[in-house]
Length: 476
Ligand code: BG6
Image 1 (tube, rainbow, N blue to C red):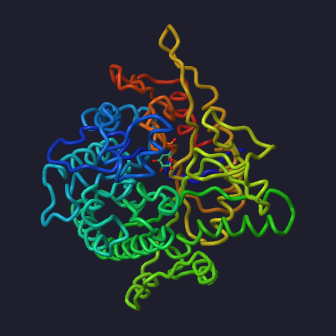
Image 2: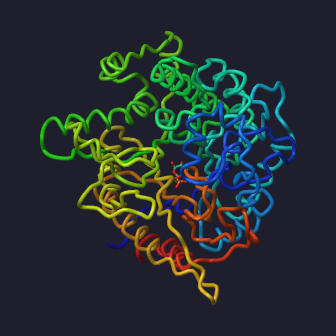
């Protein structure tokens, strides 16, 4: 399959401030949610589930505090991205670097200077910055003081933060995403929404009200982003991955449809500009009633996104049979039962390249807006050989199969603007806090206990991806 991918396609990679920068208190930065989280799958999961307890616990070692030290090494890393031929880099801005407490009256000039330098370095290297405004990074102070996104005041603080960014990076940054994986607020509410719950509170109510505040904030950001620079392209970002029915039993089909709607709900609002017709019954059955004003409805309607960014790691499987659902696998943000037709990663994530094509088609059929695959990849354990090489053929296989299906999706008619595999340089896993769950083309010498030189090494996939970009996806 040659000449499938459009010219000007945004090949690149994706990272996020909270998982790579480190320098967690430098230049006046305030705390981010990730700064109080430990590393290790089980302990991290527990910490994410009870943030109040986490705030009072001393875990000793915190992976985010130094992370991969991107804050000090970004020039070296960008040089490697350039060598691979990246056309773009997706990264995020840490809100607490810009407004350390979230509700500060003035932005922190020192924090902004870091992003000035980072964005200038990308532009100097002809790498288009693609910026996520909030990637699991609502300042911790906003959780302590306001309970996170359940409080409407956060819309105001976020708007102010966005305004600073749009003005400062006008003419430099064109591609923005308002919230990373906006649907994650339902799955990891502490990360996605900085939420803490009170005793006896209806959690669904709090999560959906928080989601509504984010949706309104996203619409306002889209509005001011367009007003400040009409060239701006403002996107949403969905943790995607179609949910399949476990069997052809209509009840399973319905269960899968419900699960898909739970995700599309967010993008239906961000892209179509209103709460979808099915949401009335869905919310009622959950015991949720969202407070929404006429002004907000107008804002949502008039300020829809320009493109649909999404992450894709795997498809999911749903059954209507509670007995079957007892086999649900825990450990991932999106619970699923095992699909007997598919293999899994070392971390139990289903590997389903065809699912990428299915997901692309579903999203494009539904929204008819350009799509951008802003995350995809395989978290795996890499072995450094005695001669220093890292032969990550499994990663190459995974990406090759996904890019093949991405090309099929384009042939199906999807308007796809770019592909940025996740963790193009190894970084700290969001879900587990591990370094050993590696996604990168570039290996970073650091382990799960924080030991290591932080030196960067090219993996075998580095040259492979370089060639993929150089041939615009023809040679896989
Ligand atoms: C996405 C997030 O959910 O998945 C990233 O946007 C995250 O922040 C990625 O790192 C992979 O998940 P994990 O848990 O393997 O880091």
